[in-house]
Length: 308
Image (tube, rainbow, N blue to C red; front, top):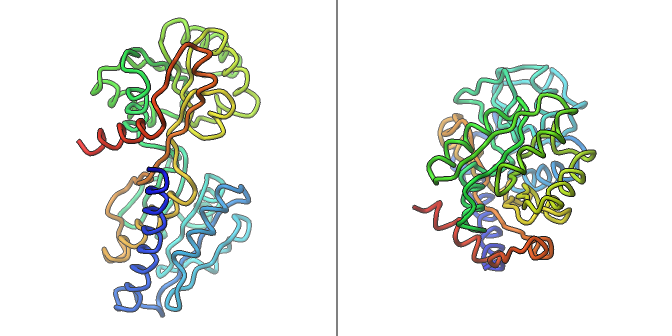
């Protein structure tokens, strides 16, 4: 299954590159008016996405530049350019120059004050809410109460999670963190009242200073934690669904192709990675008295649910 998914990912990347070249050759995109600028910070994950994107979108009929946020200048801003900004630093740096340009923004959380138009859209690097709920259902059908710690920055994510949890008969409780000093007390309340803790990519809560403490606290309480990345699971969460840099860049390429096919307009304001992987930590799960399904079985379960 994993080999099959990897082959499919490669085929999709090739297909996306071929489609993009075909668009240029067919005249749908006119080469003399065509320019893509990819802006990403030096973060290794973001740079990997950016490099993959440049490779898949470059052709003899389209120029693609890859820049750091500090290299943005006002002279490059034209209506014939599509900007792809990766990460909050790149997005904010670009917005300081001009808010009204064609832009695909790759980000973890929505940024307040940004209103997308048909020429502007988001591609979330994180997973859609229902995919997270499907993961939890795949791991253990008898978990009925789910805790989520969230700051005000994650209001949109928690709203989506709440809607999906209701749909799938899970009692989701949101625990607001308004100050760093409240974290441990609120975490303790959340663990006392729920079967499982779902971590979301909220840097105000889950950061290099706090993750180890949260995971150790949950382990002592024998409460499983669901992470949002491979590294989170390696640190002690029992499972996560995530998308690789290659999967994210493949989806971004498809969104860009559709943008040009649709007369320089995005079809959706918000997009999510099409492909995903599941990773589990069986050592931690076993120590908590849990027997997890195989990663393959979990992935197939999520795929079935998303096809329903």
